[in-house]
Image (tube, rainbow, N blue to C red; front, side, top):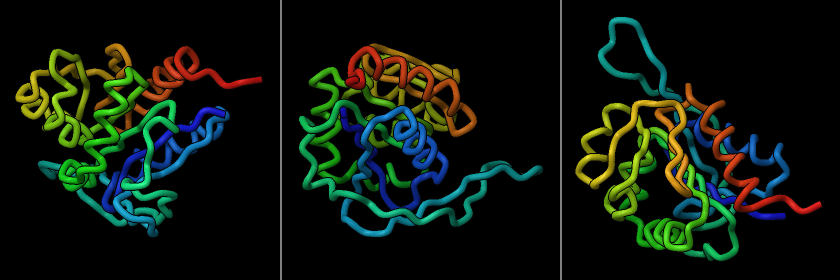
Length: 188
């Protein structure tokens, strides 16, 4: 079976890791979660409170990483998912994360990203000339990276499928699974 990689770390948005993880397993793909180190990760939940200007953050689920980013060979995976939350803030500084994501784009393999994941992708130059969704506060990051921000629930641009936040999961994963069925079909 084709394998899918999820690159994440502590403080990733709980729903943006767990929903694609479970959805892709349900579809029949093998899924590995990669983080800076192999350990139990602490995710967070971002939610909205009336009369509050931004979202709040609460502790979410804990989940083990399967593999360290340094051990990942992108050739072993058919696609990658990059969740949002705060994890992208430090993943963008990780040389192995940079190597992995750049390899997926260079090989034109499917890439799904959501919410704040663009802050980790923007420095890599992979958004240049592309249309992408993201959390609305990340629009300046998209523009500075040479991309076009699109305020939509699922934006497909070649091998890349993006969304604004966990509210967009159904459309985002439907579009990503459609791309996987074309580029990384399940056998049998």
